[in-house]
Length: 223
Image 1: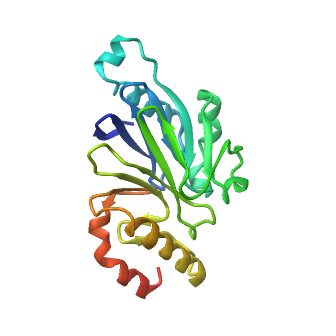
Image 2: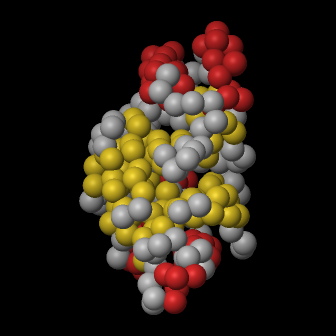
Image 3: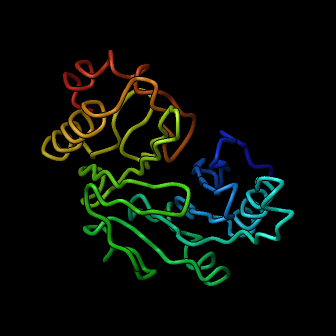
């Protein structure tokens, strides 16, 4: 399975799709230091191993010449649903990487969470940072991960909380929908510019600018 290189700035971002559910797995690699962060070890540990190997090839030539050895330091799970964690145990066992997930979702994930995430938490990985944005509703502890690329645009990994065309599934529960919609509007659309690239947990990506005109429509329809 070939990975897709989404950007090749100071941090290379790659994506693969796994399983019949078209789950996205994302990998961020510092091209200078080789530090890697994986978002959602959804399924297919061999495919994820190949993704890590692809990311290792994204180092700057000077880093490769200096003998920098890439390594996965953290696996972040955007939410606790089963289809986003099927390869988590195998990936952690193979790499020794630490794990992170939203505080309110951690207990529902079979693999222990080393780093519980709350809204606004920032992880620093040498050349880049990831900010956790809690988006409650799809699950109680769903988080998006924000990477502010130098010079922009920003990259937002939203799990199943935001897709092209609407917010994630809240099972027709008005309270859950309102919570998720409000979090997305206030914490995402209210804070980030239109050129922010949205990388969802399934399927194709989008931008905040493409989705912003439809917010009132989403609110009116209730999903």
